[in-house]
Each structure stands twice: as C-alpha cells, then as structure tokens.
Length: 268
Length: 239
Image 1 (cartoon, helix red, strand yellow):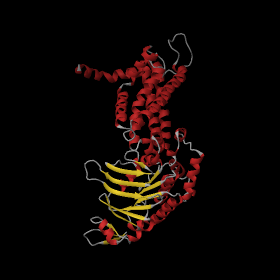
Image 2 (cartoon, chains in turn purple, cyan):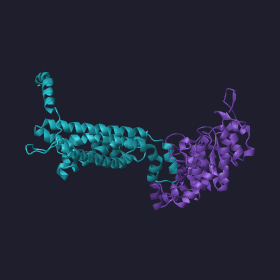
Image 3 (tube, helix red, strand yellow):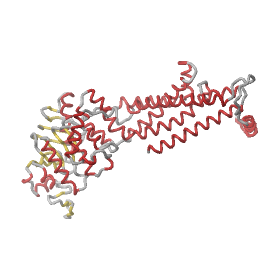
Image 4 (cartoon, chains in turn purple, brown):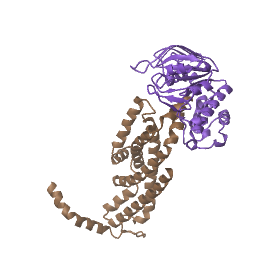
C-alpha cells in the first residue's frame, strides 16, 4: 500500500528532514510513528499525503509514485487519503453535519462540486456523512455548531469527516496531543475501530509511546529523519525508548516523563 | 495671499451668519406657483430621496459583488503572488480616484442622470470594500483550509466552506457601513450633475432660493441619520 525507497526530503538548505532507505506498510496495517520532536514524524506523514515532494527517492502510495506521477494520478490518491490533525481544524461556525459533509467535497465530479457551493450534497454524500457521525457516536450533536463541542468531541468530528471520505489510508498527526488525556485512549480506540471496520491502513504519529504500544500493530521510531526502530509492540523496550529519545524529554512506557541529565521524573 | 485670507477670516463669522440667515426659515410650502422657477422642495423631496437611495443601494450592491470577486482573489493566503499582487494594486488605484472624477468620466460615457452616479459609487466601493474583504480573508485560521484540501476540495469549495463562514459577518457589516457613506457621497455627487438630492440643492442654490436649499439639506441630513441608525442596529446584530 505504501512503499518508500531511498527517500530523501529536505527543506531548503537545512540537513535532510527525512532519510529513509526502505519502508513498506501493508494494506490494513495499523502503524504508530514515535520519536522526539523534530524527528520527522509530521514530515513523513505529509510526504505520504503528497504535501511534501522528496528531493529524490520513491514514494509509492496505492501504486502511484507521488514523486513522479502526473496530476491526475496524484489527485486520485489524494482523494483517498484522509488526514486527522492535532488541532482538529474544524469549521467552527458550521454544524457537525456540515463539517462531516465537507469530507465529501472531494468525491464529487463537476456538477456535484458546483452544487456543493450552494450547499447541495447528493443522497449518497448525506448517507455517508450520517453513517460516519453515528459511527463516532455524535448523533445527538449532529446539528450543533463546531465551537460548542469539547476537544474530544471536535476530534471525533474530524474522524467522522475523514471517514466520510471513504479513505483507503488514514493519516493521523498526533491526534490525541490536544485532547484531554482522560479521553485519549477512547479516541484511539475509536480510530482503530474505524480503521478495522473500513479496512483502511492507519498511520498515526504519537507522542506517547505507551499509547502506541497499546493501540498499534507496528511501531516505527524516527530519530533525526531516520528509522531507528521498527518492531511490534511487544518488542518495545525501555532501553530502546531511551535510545530513541536520547537528548530530549523521554516519555516512558509507564507514562512518566524524565528530562535528560537531571535524573528528575514526573508523572504525565 | 496668506494675508488676504487671514483678513477675510475676521469677516467670516458675519458673512456666514448672513448666509445662514437667508436660509431661515426653510421652505415648507406645498402650493405650485407660476412665479417660481422650480417647484417647492417638499414636493420633489420624496422622489429625490428615492433616487438618492436607488443610487446608493445599487451602487453599493454592485460594489459588494465586485469586491467579493476581487477581494477573495486578492487575498494573499488564497491565491498565488501573480494573482493577488496585481489585484491589490488595481484595488488601490480604484480607491484613489476621487468619486467626483469617476462620475464626470461616466457622464461622458453614459450621459447625465442617475446611472453615472451608480457606476461611480460602484467602482469606488469595489476599491474600498475589496481591500477590506481581502484583509478579512487573510486573518482566517489557515488550518481549516488545509483540512478541506486534504479531503480533496477545490479552490471554490475551500473558499465556500473554510473561508466564507469565518468572514461572512464581517463582510456584511463592512458593506452596510459602506452604504452609509455612499448615501452621503450620492448627495455630494449631485453637485456635479448626478440626479438626486444634491442636484436639486445645487439647482435651488443657483436660483438664489436658499430657503429651499435649507429644506433639502435638512431632508438629506434626516436621510443620512435614519440610514445610519438602521445600519448601526443591523451591524450590532451581526457581531
């Protein structure tokens, strides 16, 4: 489903943001990407989405090499990759239903797109949207404005919006970092349920290794743009984590954070 | 020259008082008479108010439509540099041409009457509103735009769903405020020949009928005050 070879991504004159020799993600996998800030987690996700063009290398998504393919093929892939953002990015003045319908905007052809400009959506669009809203458990709030919802609810709307797209791949960039930690697990459980239900491939970047271990089938650790860890959750060790996060705040598997060099630990 | 003007200043209060005196009392008569060059002001006031309102409403409406198009295209965060930069320059040019000059240009193009006034106000409003609309768009949260893009939306869809909900209240508010100012502009345009209250103030002035001038000035002031109040209350609701 996603195949990366000899990838190098660079922003201007700075050292490469990503250097990946080989990375394959199979269809239906649930992958968590962890690593310190600046390691390249977001860059990797944006490269898979097609927002970042590599300096060289191959980024093959759904059979299309995003680095070299023409606009038509790239758009075809673009429409089928759903993204969930850390900051939710909902249209706050619109209702839950309207926000989720926005997930359908890319699926229409010419007349459908024209119609969407005046608020018209097809029967199929509305069916998908309602189904997605029920799936994330927001049916009672369907006509509520986005800015009246809590953080966790807003992120669930974002999940519904991505689901409405009927995505083949779902990318989640730190989906629970702006959500009350008490709800983080529920949200990730929802995300993984949704992924299984729709047989999609899920790639999420997480700041909390213990959550990655709990919800993903496979964990990839990035450090300074390189893959230094690629294992299943059971094989993740404290030692491995310490090495991955060397020099930055380490968030251990039990949820405690320790600052390097100080020997101090605090609970998350 | 400066000395002459300063000496005139000492005469000013006396002369102004004299002028104001001739305007008092305002002509409130209704009967038609052969002796007057023009009909009494109150008789034509109704029609003149209608014309002035027509010019300002249609002029502002045209301005709003044009400003929506150019404003959105002129927003730095919505279009590439080669699009928004020339548009911003064009809007600045439209703003800088005095409305009276525009009206006179349109006299040549479309003749006398209300139309040149409407066009002049439209063009000027496009310049003023266009810049404000563009700035409103530039202040929008950029995240929603990208989220819609991720779902595959095209430029128009993104503008409709990511930008419009955030700027619509401001756009209507700015347009109403502009309407307010355009009503006053319409009256002034009358002095150069655009139909409406201003034109008749000028006609009466030339006929040395200052009392009728006073009547129409009062009518104009009332019109502006009323529209001002209505606009204020609607704009307060829009917050």
